[in-house]
Length: 114
Image (cartoon, rainbow, N blue to C red; front, side, top):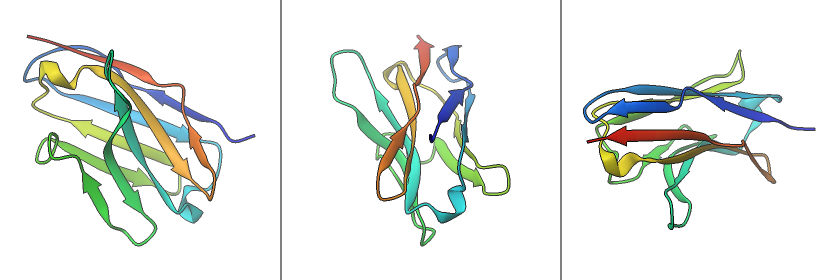
């Protein structure tokens, strides 16, 4: 049973930083893709940052230059460094890994106050 567990969310003031972590119970080195989505209240889940097995990383336009996705294959960890946070970044953030089938974590709440 594959499990993804996120951590690192919380309440932060605008302009602050948070680092989200996701531990995966599987070898992320063999994954097709992985990354982070988010879902704000009343909105659909949207991609934030994704990376593929070819090494290509894509960011949502709204987070480019502020968020950085990274991974540690040896530890099966995926990270999202979030800087210069804005109130509109408030959402539940979900980690995912794609091994033909997509697996999701349970989500971690990020709240940015103005």
